[in-house]
Image (cartoon, rainbow, N blue to C red; front, side, top):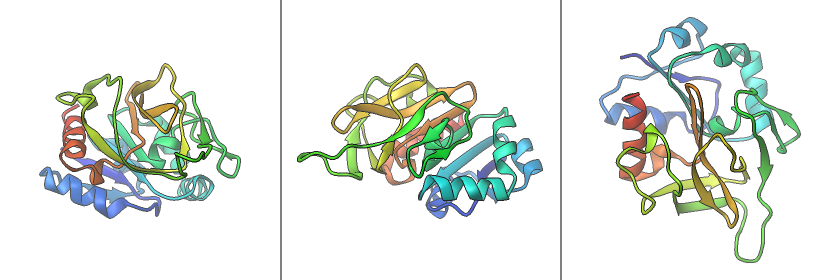
Length: 195
């Protein structure tokens, strides 16, 4: 099975590669459209800022390639947010694959921004969460979020509910860091590889 990890100079790529290797996969870090199209699965990790990430995707021509992919696709953290329509972060147009707009958390006395640390998942749906329950926790680091909508497959709260995971067709996304979420994150990655 060929696993492609999108190379657009985004952060957090090495830890995703290591997590996949621990599962026995041999991932390929690539920006080559032909490799991405023929891969059995595609992962789209991200860490950083939306407008810089979209500029890097445009420079590599990946903003045109990624929406055409038909195999199982998983966006992680910023990689999930970039699947949406628009981000409040520097007023950035995104890939437009899922019908949400990314918003910034509003801090309050009890909830700092960024939302950082362990949080449990609620309202789990879909194959990524096979074998998991609402007692399971994953690791988040983010200041922006996708609201809950018809595309939401898991929720978390900070303090209001937000999309912890999304799906539309073959495109899946998780706001948390699977590769930093211990056994739960490993199970989610294994479930993705089994799609």
